[in-house]
Amino acid sequence: MNKHLPLFISLLLLPLLSWADSYAPSAEKVVDNVYAIIGPLDQRSPENDGLNNNLGFIATPDGVILIDSGASYLGARRVARAIAKVTSQPVRWVINTGSQDHRWLGNDYFAALEAEVIAMKRTAETQAEYAAQQMESLERFLGERLAGTTPSPATRKLEGDDVHITLGGVELIIRYTDTHYPGDSMVWLPQQRVVFTGDLVYVDRLFAVLPWSSVKNGLKAYAAMEALNPEIIVPGHGAVSDLTKARRDCGDYYDFLNNNIGAAAEEMVPMEEIINEYNSLPAFEHLEHFSDLHRTNMNRTYLEYEAF
Ligand SMILES: [Zn+2]
Image (tube, rainbow, N blue to C red):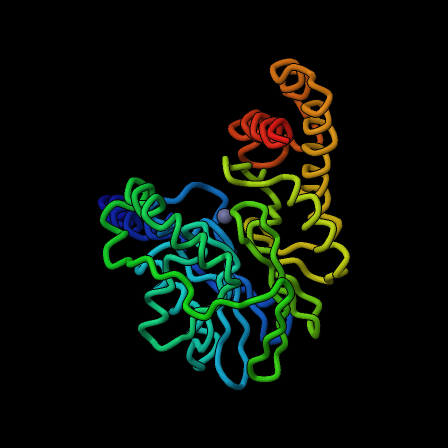
């Protein structure tokens, strides 16, 4: 055997390995004609194009309904390729469940392909409000991979709190959750008993309470999601789940924040004291990002309750 062969092979594998490290969006079948695109649990990066969240799509005879559009122009293009592997139908509708960067900054890409971009009215308003801040922060994570991205809030703004829309015989019900960002929503497919929760539900990783999040709303919206009795949950982050797993990784944590931290704030227990008491929380320590988010989540929950 040629003694240079092992070196030759390892050089040959080098680009393959680094390619394998980068995240490639791919469609995972949920039920017939309904797909999830499950993103990695880590931070936004040039390798994942900010697609560190879940998206989904529904193939109908009248075209594809895409749920959320990714964080950038280049990310949206990769999502479009993942869809094209499953169906030759064009994307007719993009529905944004929220206004966090990776839910909507790919809108412009799909709008240019003549998709109609749809969201609840207040979702679209929050998109416009946060656009500049999100572009600035994404630039730090994505660098030149943000090229070509133009923030384009949803143009068809749905009025009301409980919206029913249909394309190609597929019925969708959209409802506000108002949890991670003001105006966030979830999409329920009553015929398939599948719910796309947007950033209401996170599994496998801890959710982050942001300064503008509401854990009070999270508690209510989570109960409303459970009351739908979905067979399948496509969470905003983490693997496709059922009610049991979502409750364990997420619903119980909304309960904890509201019932333990919120209640302590109302009783005026000092913040430091209550945060130190629950610093360790074995039920949730298996979740990714627990150690970097848990204390801040408790702090922001306390502030939300203290404000009232
Ligand atoms: Zn998210």
